[in-house]
Amino acid sequence: MSDDVQTIVAKLSGTEDTSIAAELAERQLENLPLGYTETYGDPALHEVIARTYERADAADVICFAGAEEALYLAMNVLLDAGDHAVVVSPNHQAAETAPLALCDVTGVALDPDRDWALDVDQIKAAIRLNTGVVSVSVVNGRRVPG
Image (cartoon, rainbow, N blue to C red; front, side, top):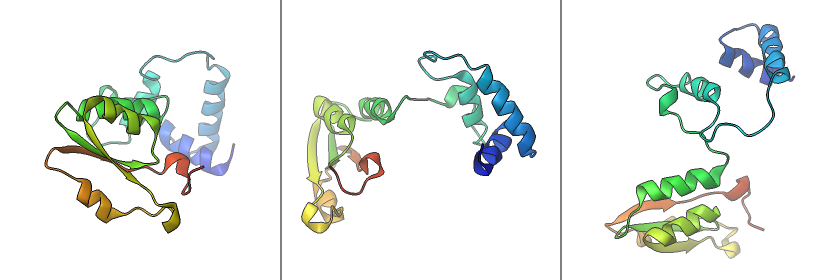
């Protein structure tokens, strides 16, 4: 286990001793059941995440198996018929398609001739009074699609 991982595990387990934390992590890993987790994520993960915030508990934490699920939920919570969304493209599929099923969408394409630069003026021009979401993403952490 790398020093960085040991330090993170130590902080999350509430100890400053990285060797104890590493031993705890190894024991947990040895006893880890393999299979599907709870639909909303492991309760222990919720607890660990909640501890990183001053005013949150495990019930306030939502976990997802990837960006697509989270984006789909966010778009369905934030947008209704009659709303408008601005979506920079390329983007995650759910960020592009979920709004289309819910409301009017204005797409703003990144320009390959400008090294895929984000045109903030284009985004500003697309915003309306009923815009509920402006979705901008660097898909998979890459700067250039494809």
